[in-house]
Amino acid sequence: MIAVTSYVGGRWIDGGRTVARLVNPATEEPVAEVRAGGIDFDEVLRFARERGGPALRAMRFAERAALLEAASKALHAVRDALLEASIVNGGATRADAKFDVDGAVGTLAYYSGVGRRLGDGRFLVEGEGEALGRGARFWGRHVRLPLTGVAIHINAFNFPAWGLAEKAAVALLAGVPVVVKPATSTALVAWRCMQRIVEAAGLPEGAMQLVCGPIDGLLERLGPHDAIAFTGSAATAAHLRALPAVTRLGTRLNVEADSLNAFVLGPDVEPGSETWSMFVRDAVREMTQKTGQKCTAVRRILVPRARLDEVGSALGEELRAVRIGNPALDEVRMGPLATASQLADFREGVRRLEASGARLLLGGTERPQVVGVPEGRGFFVAPTLLRADRPREALAVHEHEVFGPCATLMPFEDVEDAIALVALGRGGLVASAYTDDRELVEQLLLGLGPWHGRLFVGSARIADQAISPGTVLPSCVHGGPGRAGGGEELGGERALAFYTQRVAVQGDRALIERLVGARNEA
Ligand code: NAP
Image (cartoon, rainbow, N blue to C red):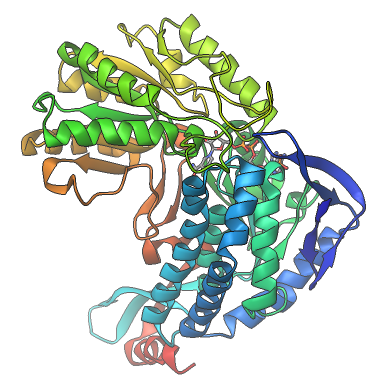
């Protein structure tokens, strides 16, 4: 049995205490054990703050970029092993596994590029300088300096490789050491990534540590120059927000939580048009990719009332054709949910949507027909489409995220109504509008934009080029207000803000310009 261990203080630690037995969610066969214990969290933090931090801060951006490039190549070199781990531990099909693993490789490579562009500097300079007095000599400029503490990265179960990589890439590039805490249920993939990074990326000692299993007591030890980047449920986020380190000491906290992402079909879109096909294709992909276990998956599908039946039939036809089963088989398009508890939550969630007034069009809580698994085994569900004809009354469809292949179709009367319905989700990661009407796009941007971190506009002009809206790209921000956690990650260089302190430097212009200019030589 594989023992999933922790990497702290420059060595692998098997604390000997089994805290979880990981199973293949398709067959329920055991896959690995997560071992905890024997970790001194004071020592973990000291190692990061005193060894990893200074080593990273002494490097120039281009040097940190080289580390990220090495990490990206290191993961790419074991891509097949990572895909395999993702299939057996996460229930991902090969395509789903690629989404996670290639996302990790690509995001590290992308941030390596950002670092190369930042070049020889060790800190960031923001904007232009400004005269602050009557004359030209008293001058002000803004710079961003790396935090001198440690970044704790707490990841969700659904993207064990990408979650590890996208957070680590940004913190390391900023010059801040990281401690990664992967979700226990899919820790095998994160552990394999870390093994490879340790072996082949050449990170300085203390730059990156991995703690598998519980981290009780770690967060209580954080201070004002530390940061927590969290992805997961609103309930855990609420616990983190109340940590004394956060409330009293100013430990930074970024939250990426749940979201009831919406699709809006423009009234201008005719059945059979290119934009219509794109809308149907993307909705099906967003419902079924990673078995709907994506924070950016579509949960609400809003269409003009007159189109409800047609959209229901078009989606139903595609969703019924999705082959469900053992994700290790090539013909399978959708694997199981990741754990038994996700299955229980899914069923409970669907019942909750029904109780709120949505009716089932297909799927539901019953086990579907599956291929390639022993009878009765695995945490399988069918693509599940509900319909809420009175969406203002069926409030659960705007409030409860069913974390699986589940979405609710609903009508809107006009654009204001669509915007108001989407807003009932109280803040999301991404809203997607499908329309070729430019004026409508402006209305939707103004109406939906403030409630989201990202607005995707699908149209005939990009139908053959665009990737599906649930894909998070490192160059565009990821996060959202309100329910989505109020956080922000990625977005190119913007992401470094979380790990750096903005400082306004005021004084003699010549001195400041030399300092700022000298950042490259310092
Ligand atoms: P979760 O239960 O909150 O777990 C997330 C992470 O927090 C795991 O690593 C978990 O560790 C850890 N954790 C739990 N309790 C903790 C505590 N008291 N102190 C420190 N860490 C703690 O969430 P989940 O059910 O795994 O994830 C699904 C949710 O995440 C969904 O709601 C989804 O929408 C959201 N999500 C959001 C994004 C985004 O980017 N916005 C991305 C993916 C998922 P253990 O596994 O050891 O419990």
